Image (cartoon, rainbow, N blue to C red; front, side):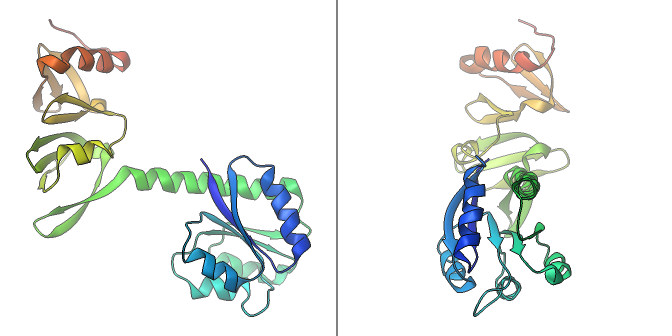
Length: 234
């Protein structure tokens, strides 16, 4: 994954040193360098950023004051010459606290930690979505969906525990779903992880029997049987 990062430090030498480190790590993309928290604040208003390398002692507004002033900040790694701020940094839930002069191996360790955390958050975020049902918004996870049926501008979502009807098209849902889902009929998409068997033109998923269309049967069988050992009845 690519991590969009910003370096903020009022010392030009410190900014250049961190920039050299960033350039050595392929997963990092440096999108800006800022000389103080005010210019960083202006940049964040119009740009998406994953990670900040943030100095603390800066004019006008220090790094801690800046973090306290914004909502939903990116992940932060403090880069500072002052150890006295460490406890405050952890209270603000920063990812790491690097003391200057910063060695490359210590910098890399902090970046690796950030990459693990950001990757987990991205995976969690991409697995969940909201649907509107009877005026309420309900959070669903792709992992809990057995199959989805479409009818014109509505879809019915069958999960492990519930069934939901919402105003969406099957085409819209298909554009966002993960690779474990497969279209088996013009109006049906199934989660292949829950297929327990195939009988003729029927898929078995939990207590449900899902019809496979003739035009899609060959493709469905090929995809399903690649990863599952099932009895195939012709």
